[in-house]
Length: 337
Image 1 (cartoon, rainbow, N blue to C red):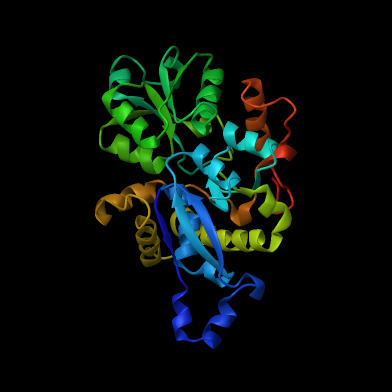
Image 2 (image 1 turned 135 degrees about the vertical axis):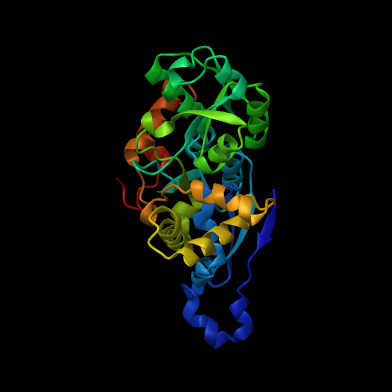
């Protein structure tokens, strides 16, 4: 994990200049740790950070980076991080059942007409006949952990196609990529900024789209500790306001493309500081642009999708039958769709 902090550079210009930019005086310089993955889908947090939207709300943000969703949920529950943006997992739901975490908003979502998560086959599996999801029967399918979003997506695809999968937990996205390239695992689903880079380089083959099986899927959510949600509303609302401003900028630049080319390039350069930062901009920019999916406006949350996910976790015996969506979600913060 990597940590760094953005200080309010405007503070050097004098207090009078800074005051209009701050949120509630009670929140001035309130320190927050935000969990993130180095994915384009986490860009709303990066934009809010780089453009000073967190600072405007009186929040002094530090990022903590993870390589999978479930460790981030544990970090929120243990108060090693204050807010996170990631998929709904069995681990997150179980922590919510223990009173340790709450989903408070929506983030990434599948939307018709916008390229979303891809279903991939290794080259070896493709050459052996895995050219469409209907041919997945008996094949190995990569997940980070049992009960991860990858597990959920794979199960939903398998159910729709009437096939059986063998799930292979590999813990980290990087390990899955290596296993796909080497043919140690047959299939996987992943967001387009990674999927298109892999297929474009000839490392794997695309055999379908997740949206064909899960239209409107609420891919990721914003979550926090139950304590923050219930006892620190001002701080939580401030975070969501800043995050939503970041999402608006991201959507305008790379999803709706309602800004000019120079502003689009500026957005890609901003994201490149966090995503594919080890690659030259010229190479990384294509993957970042190709990976742009809708981030929900104002954090709106697709409750139909959330309900479906909770029901699936129950059906698989991954969470207790007594757990409800209300256990997982604090519905008081954003619009529910």
